[in-house]
Amino acid sequence: MRNNVLYKNNYDPMRQQWILVVPKQLRCDVLKSLHDAPTSGHLGFAKTYDRIRRKYCWPGLYGSERRYVSHCRECQRRKSPPQLP
Image (cartoon, rainbow, N blue to C red):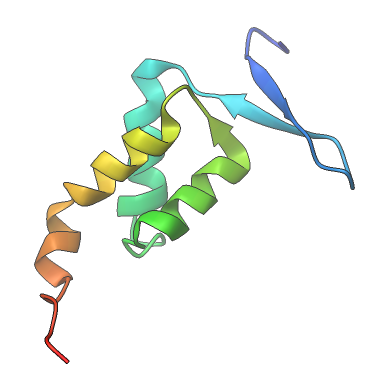
């Protein structure tokens, strides 16, 4: 903990990396900024998850992010339906 902010030490053999543990009340803001923002491009689940986990963590991050992306109206609107081969 530094300056009343909790960090997690993420093991990386090349360097020590500290990842911010996001409190519940700020998780939606993180998801919005890394998925919905114009610079984020509404990437799919895997790419958004990868972007989040590099800097942030919280219990249940995987499920939170999966639900958020699957309920994103913009992604549902743009995503084309599956095509038969």
